[in-house]
Length: 195
Image (cartoon, rainbow, N blue to C red):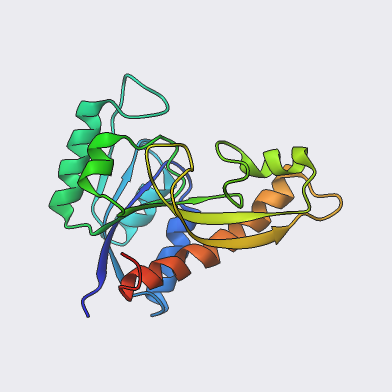
């Protein structure tokens, strides 16, 4: 079975992308990254990709902070389609995905979110969980739809909130869980178990 071709979109350091790359290099994941894209020109995800010879692209959006304009997103769709990507993997991508991308890749865009959705969608979910006083949070991989963190859930991993947790300590443990869950879910796609 040929390797699943993925494109990864991120805005930050790239720790989930690094976890995916580690799983690939360890032989646990039959996935080939064909493109890494970021809306932040110096994002860690781009450096990781460039160091491994994976093509990269910078998404230049001058108009909006939380989404892409239709023309910019349409250009991104063209690049993703040209790369041959079968699955779009959002890894710390901080913009809402809209119709050009959703229509071009129906049920083929996934995201990881640092809470047990549907609880605590949106930004800084670990801080939301601490403020709410819940005993358990975690992370969720879900299909992306037009809402904010509202798509169908594919997989979740629980993380206990410990006495004395700070936003930083909790976020660090959630990220550890993310780095295990995301490659596990991608492996299911690579085995063609998920549509």
